[in-house]
Image 1 (tube, rainbow, N blue to C red):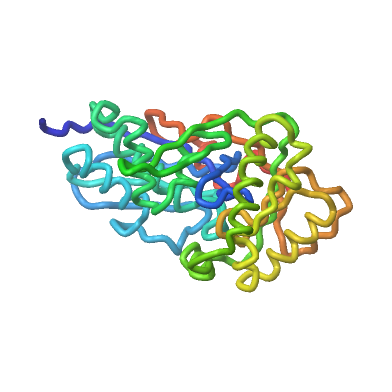
Image 2 (cartoon, rainbow, N blue to C red; image 1 turned 90 degrees about the vertical axis):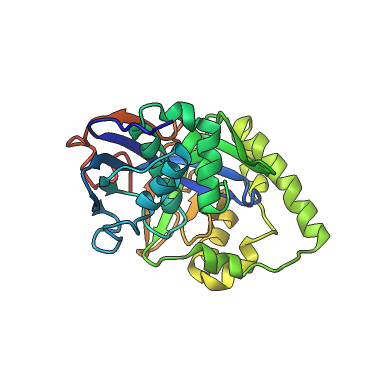
Length: 314
């Protein structure tokens, strides 16, 4: 069946995400109220990418851009490629900080490509979109909350990634501590050992199970529920500032973890107002995004083109 493309632009808003949440390595994730807005339309030829905000002047402006690469992967599934593409990205999610910037780009690309095909949702339903996004990213823990919103549990079957989204209890108030330096997932994964002691694996599995209960029903248990022995300690030497801040927050009774692969720190309970952080960190209180990625027709408006992270408090 030939692929027919829609006339005019489409746009998508995608949330930042924090994965792992301590013990939920490669499985648990949370969507946060900090967003990238991306628009795309079919053109007569060539690829043009305009980037505003985070990554402007650094990210590619052609087929190498991750949004376009994800669109190309989706067009492969959808059965055909347009002659050209114009893409506009307004980025507010910091790059390479552990807040899911790559997953946001991948999800944006997959959903934009689907929306540009007239029967795209029939050819690539939501479950298939999740599987494709996870395949591009390499793991589903960030793409799942980006797509579904809220608190997500993701896992992989032989057929690909699957996920569910659960409501978050009142009293969970995320705060992120974002440093100036960057971190990279590949480097963080390289620090992990090939095996871990059985006792550490059992400890972490129990805390991951408790974390589901704490996030959905009883936030008073968030501090013990976010304890981890599977990955954070092994990565500590590569980001000492992050490790020190997590330890200090937890010593003060705050349920703090490394956000994704770091170096951002995520606190799931509110830090004391007098907690000494220093000037090396940007501190943003972010709501939980319960909706996930949202697609609409038309160009980005004035509000969407504002590169300031609307809604965050520092």
